[in-house]
Amino acid sequence: MLKENKENTGRLGVIVAHYGVAVDVLFADDNSRTMVRVKRNSGHVVGDNVEVEAEILTRLERTSELARMDARGGIHIVGANLDILCIVVTCEPIPSPGFIDRAIVAARASGHTPVLVLNKSDLACFKDYEKAVRPLYNDSVEIFSISAETNDNLEELKQFFSKGHRGIFVGSTGVGKSSILNKFLPEINLATGEISESKKRGRHTTTVSTLHILEDGGELVDSPGFNDFGLVDTSVAELAYYFPGFEAATETPCKFRDCKHRNEPGCSVMDALAAGNINRDRYKTYLQILEEVEAIDLQPRYRERRSRRKKN
Image (cartoon, rainbow, N blue to C red; front, side, top):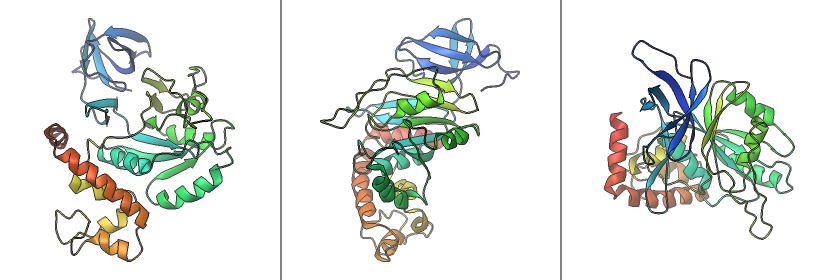
């Protein structure tokens, strides 16, 4: 939470919920809350630190923001001033190809630490899924295998957040984000959707982004689910640096500074691939994401956003 200083004349707080034309502010001095009216497109998001004086809301500078791209290419800020991105996946419904890699890249590019949460360890399909996933990501991110249904290893995840992290659960519909949050904060009793047997997908049930203070320390944001990331904060030049599994290879500079790690001579990534140090299926995923980022790079609004972020 924020601390008062001599420059602040109003009350300092954090936005804990956004309802379109109003935001719910939790104040730092006494933990009281109040609703403050805002314009529908004011740009305020959950996690924003604000100053409130005479019903006037002033947003303070953000330390980070998590963005996604909608179907029309618009940029939406999911949450502000977070440090952890918890990527929730499970064996049923299984994530779309490349989802985990894209999420890790998006987290790193926007200044967040990615954490992989494998949920539903109580399912019969889980062990095989975990055996396939862990070897790919053990060296790249911290991994928690849990079950929101049976409470398996939930305490470990709670202890992780108790270190003072502010995080958000992201993942496809039906992976159990709200179920996990209910175990962290049972008093909020978020609705959870059942999985359709025909499509093995859950109906999305959370409609308002909210920030919650955890009893043992740390904060969690629950946000309406989305199935994928638009890599709005990632450039072609940075993609390999952020891509999971490429960490060791990118420590050695390529011959050319603008190397895209396709067929260029003197490429450290290609050398690692040839030596068997990079999984070929993972490399194919990198090439697919590279094509997407190249297309995004052609659009001025995304280049302008990245330029602004680098200046800040």
